[in-house]
Length: 218
Image (cartoon, rainbow, N blue to C red; front, side, top):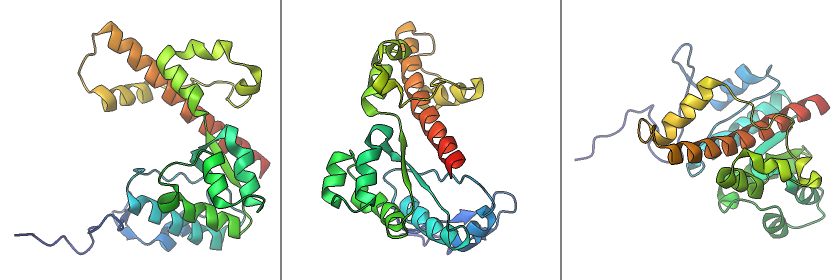
């Protein structure tokens, strides 16, 4: 026997429920946009494979545009070294298939992130490739943060001045999320974990730097 879900509870992977953390009230995307309209930066987290996350992002993007049309979309899904390829598509100089190939779009681009980019494209809004270059992130994860010391200048320019900036609380949360209490005393695991953490910080700080620079420029 299947028990029906409560009416307010999301029933499919396309459904989402927005709840005001302060009052516990359910919000529509339009109401959420009104609450966010005065913010300079809005960050929407997601599970990459969960369609409700992407549908919600698209709806909030459109609702915010009605209130704040001077909008810039910043994306984790594109890396900074592919900004030119992304810009060429936005200007109509290349087609979508070429952009997907040349800009290293994720495999689920068409079903998940295309609506965001197309909204920006149709309204002539900037789209910022924000993530750190994937090959650099992989090398830091495998070889450690010292890998950046030998990085060529033409690649180093894509990275922030403080690529491994962090806080103790964030590190503790990262370790707990990955391993919990397992292998905390294993030196090999500790080194591997530290490299993985540094790779994540490189991603985070590159994206934060791109957001900050974009805000200053716009």
